[in-house]
Amino acid sequence: MKVLALIPARLASTRFPNKPLAQILEKSMLQHIVERVQLCKEIDQVAVATCDQEIIDHVQSLGHQAIMTSNLHERASDRCAEAVTKLEKSENTKYDIVVMVQGDEPMTDPRMLSDVLKPFTDDPNLQVVNLYADIQLGEFASTNCVKVVMDLVGNALYMSRAPIPVSMDGIERPSGKQLGLIAFRRQALQKFTELTPTPLEVNESVDMLRFLEHGIKIRMQRTIYLTHAVDIPSDIAEVERLMKQQIKQ
Image 1 (cartoon, helix red, strand yellow):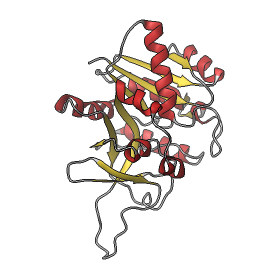
Image 2 (tube, helix red, strand yellow; image 1 turned 90 degrees about the horizontal axis):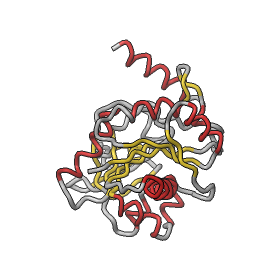
Image 3 (tube, rainbow, N blue to C red; image 1 turned 60 degrees about the vertical axis):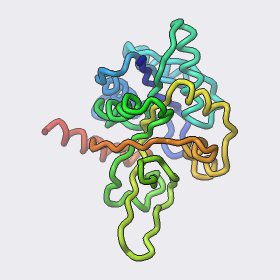
Image 4 (tube, rainbow, N blue to C red; image 1 turned 90 degrees about the vertical axis):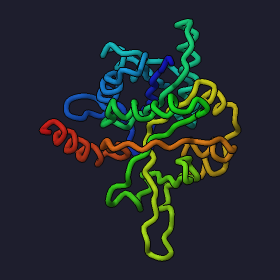
């Protein structure tokens, strides 16, 4: 099983411009992510997918691979689909699995990639696996946290930035926090680009709703490893605090 890890990144962000190049403990956010992903032994190749020359230059200056993509993509999954096609053509190779690691997850643990890949070896029929974690205190009401509810075998039923599920009787119901770490079989990622964008996908700004609205199953895989996405500038301080905490352990 040949596995490619792609990190989609762009400078244009309404909430946090130039976010991928933000400094976290003397390294750019992108550098943290690339170096952590490379530590996963199941990954054969790592590359950054971007539409910005500044990011290309930065990544290459660190000795890593970057792929230029169109600036018209609305979804990270579409950007990754273009990038893997270009990479396969330039390297004259084919990948079996593409793992998308969002460019705002500087605390990505290499063991998280192992977690998201494991279901593919257990079930050859799986097409898409999305990592999730337990929701932390204060995240349930945040629109920056995408909540996911699942069926009894672990497939996603719905994902929302709203607090779901609602508890009418006051009893806590199980849900998880979707993480920006998604693994696709190569043909499934290509399928994503061929599907028409869907109303809920656009409304919630959640890529995976395109699959769900078109009736394609997404297996959710739980991870125990701590992560904290950077959505707004104030998240940097919390990520630095957590990283320092990890160093002390």
